[in-house]
Length: 153
Ligand code: HEC
Image (cartoon, rainbow, N blue to C red):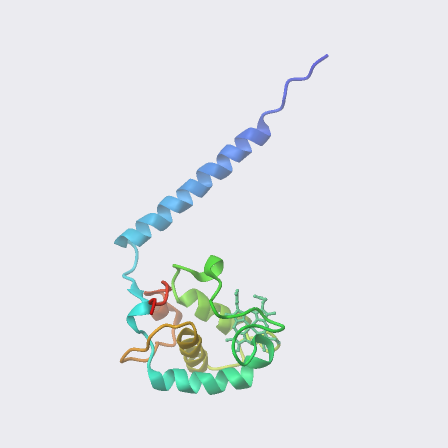
């Protein structure tokens, strides 16, 4: 006797495809401006002074795993920031990962201001220009900044 081929696998695939499409549409509508206003990071969103203090904090708290040149070691390279994880997304995503998971050996042990200055330094090292104002040290405020590509020079 021949058993009919089962179909549940197929309909599950269709469900996944539909869910993925829905997610894409949602992301697209946010990018279209239905979501919060976005400011591109390439427009200059941190100050020089902030990045300089971030340089010192990075050397103290992060460099032993990510390398003093940020190119990785025990931890991954931070230049460029992983495009799959962070590219085109809100800058708050990077900030929150740092704030909640880093330093890997002492998560959340630094002040938000220090994380923001380290983030400014990481942006500097990624080729993003500085601007007039320092980066805000809050997830909500950083959600309005979009991690685009650094300007080509
Ligand atoms: C003890 C080693 C260690 C220290 C110290 C450390 N990290 Fe990490 N970091 C890691 C490892 C391992 C990963 C990858 C695992 C993960 O993402 O959970 C990582 C991942 C990251 C990522 C995500 C990178 C990506 O491509 O997804 C960022 C951003 C980051 N670290 C920033 C920092 C910052 C900023 C500091 C200093 C405040 C810091 N890390 C300190 C080990 C470390």
